[in-house]
Length: 181
Ligand code: SF4
Image: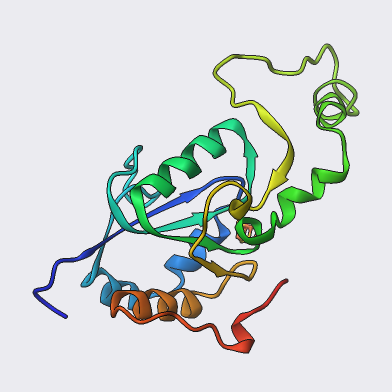
């Protein structure tokens, strides 16, 4: 494919731990193969803050606050193909474990009544994104084209998946790849 225009790929972590991004880097030297065919747009690898027109958007993490909703909608507008990368994006994952708790009570427990705290207050700076009542998987907010489960999906799986997309093939996830850990 050398000489062909490179596909633009953007990535973001919403309510995630960056473990899925680490898995992307885990493909080791195959990352160099990948970079022959793609260039990264907005992503933690480039530190570009706003997403522009892209071929593929990889979304790590669930949707836990108003800023996540805004960023996710921006990715949907800008990316031709949008991918939920990892368990948190696919089904809310670890961050969604707070969904059975009241968000107000969570904030009070963390900032006011935690052992060892004195004179704490719940942060209310208007710059801080407003937490949502629940953490949502990304498909509850925007249309998602592909789901890559796993916590995290392996570097090999991400490489195979992206290679299929680059070559214009519909990625097929075999049974072992569909892990919901
Ligand atoms: Fe981290 Fe796992 Fe969530 Fe990926 S799926 S962001 S590795 S907790």
